[in-house]
Amino acid sequence: MGSILPRVGPVTCSLGLHLNDTNRPILARSSAASIVADRTATARLLSFIALGGVLLSLGAVWAHVGFLGTMIVGLEADASGQLTTIVGTGYREIARPMLLAGYAVQGIGAAVLMRLIVDTLRASASLRRSKVNPAKAATNEVTVAHPSAPSAQSGEVK
Image 1: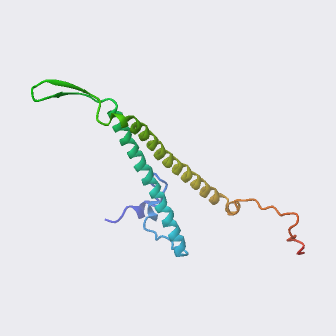
Image 2 (image 1 turned 90 degrees about the vertical axis):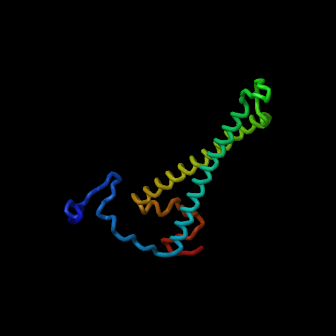
Image 3 (image 1 turned 60 degrees about the vertical axis):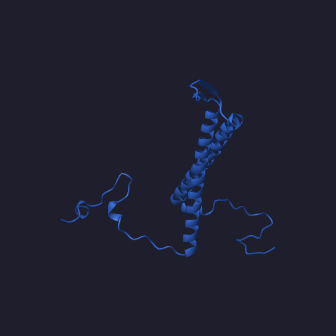
């Protein structure tokens, strides 16, 4: 029994990819510099994702520990069987600043990740626009001739 794909024809999966193209070779890059640039950009992107995740996690831990440090209540039995009520912790003095610092670090981590999302969406929209209209995307700025610049049509040089 052979594969079902050649008999079915072009099959499109839910992502819009043609399944018959899965074994097609990847086109070679024109230079090693473009590969290095792509890998550098990917490494930078993954580093920012990791940084945002670490900041979110660290902020959550600090906020949680700071929150618990402000409100611990417990009972303790000593050797004679007497129950003693414990209110507070040994780090109660730094618990409130730790709680606030945890919120701040979480906010910084979320801001890093949100900035990364916005920049990625802008880059993909720019890439999409450049594929739709390559002539307009080749120059992102408008070039206006300065009045004192030489005229390209007449060929004169001032």
